[in-house]
Image 1: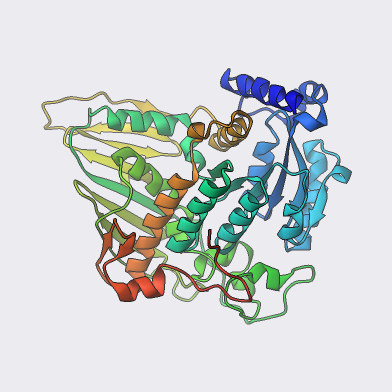
Image 2: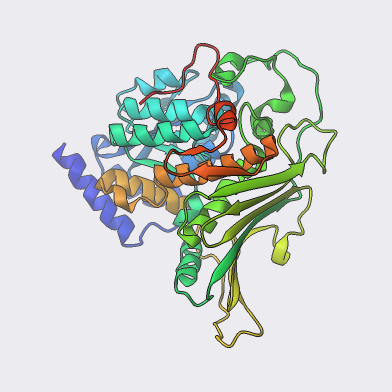
Amino acid sequence: MTNRRKFIKDSSRIAAGGILLSGFSPSAFAGTVKRVNASDQIQIAAIGINGMGWSDTKAALKVPGVNLVALCDVDKNVLDKRMNELGELQMDASKVKTYGDYRKLLENKDIDAVIIGTPDHWHCLQMVEACQAGKHVYVEKPIGNSIEECRAMVAAQKKYNRVVQVGQWQRSQQHFRDAIDFVHSGQLGNIRTAKVWCYQGWMKPDIVRPDSNPPAGVDYQSWLGPAPKKPFNASRFHFNFRWFWDYAGGLMTDWGVHLIDYALFGMKADVPKTVMALGGKFAYPELAQETPDTLTTLYEFEHFNMVWDQAMGIDNGQYGRDHGIAFVGNNGTLVLDRGGWEVIEEKNSKNKVGKPHVKPSENGLNQHLINFTSVIRSGKMEDLTAPIQVGADVATVAQMGNIAYRTGKRLAWNKATEKFTDEAVNREYLAKAYHNGYKIPRV
């Protein structure tokens, strides 16, 4: 145990010193890793590895002293594919165990931390159970598929005192944080409106397909988990799960939690007073999708308004960017996205501001996993860039927008009770019913 603590502290100093560059390969630190005893390294596992879960895993493996010991997926085809790819990562596949049932993986005492990259409707159960099993957790966004799930996940982190990082990796990217520092400097003047938008021309739901048998190798009942029991349909499976209410919340919870998070961060806000939304299936009404492809949501806060604007099938977003956040102030507007940020001066303002144009200089995902593993080693929860409460706040705001759209109402939020003032809406939408013998965690 003494050796493990020493290694953890030494590794934290390396990370703090900036030696961990975003572009290195696992082999770059092969000599360092070989000199570290196996008992002194962080052993990780990944649950759900078809998409972002696999990207997260590869980013974690760039951190010295982090080893992959297990993979889990309900689709054996995906599991086999990832195992075959381990050679590209210069890893010995014989040292990585595979699971179809995440609960069996959590019983493995050799695992220190898990990465959860499953569909949204699984995040809550798997994160809570991982904390119960004594594992640290990196959970993909949005953390929960309902407001009630977000609350349960925050409570679980507090009860079990595990390091939990939410996959909102922009929180670890320096140019985003520099932009927020500029917003907080006051140079923009009074900010009355925060605009958040996501125009994604490439995103397109699947065609309407008939129900069918699941593909060979897919444990479909385990994929459904707590979601309502329905026949398998390819148009709802893998990437396309995000367009159906049973499993996710559409573009609002997919990209929205990334971007709205920074609007809240910049405005030092958490939840709005009221919310209303209008939208529909205007781009692809003939395709397989329940969530809207076009949505405009207005959030009322105490001293400003926030607008969420989404459109699938279109790339021409605001300020010539297909996604972003704009802080509209009396002296100027700061526009921020993954490609950088700039300030547009208000031409008639007497209070001139600078016009910086900043481009990103690092890989935010790599930095996010460095931050996660560094906090596991140090135990300093306050150093996490995207702790569970941050994920819960923005997921709640995104869920509120979707609920306003689905009800067609202007909804008021009671911050003290953490509920809407409309009890009928609370009963129907604050929590999602669990099915197939599963129960929402009560922490």
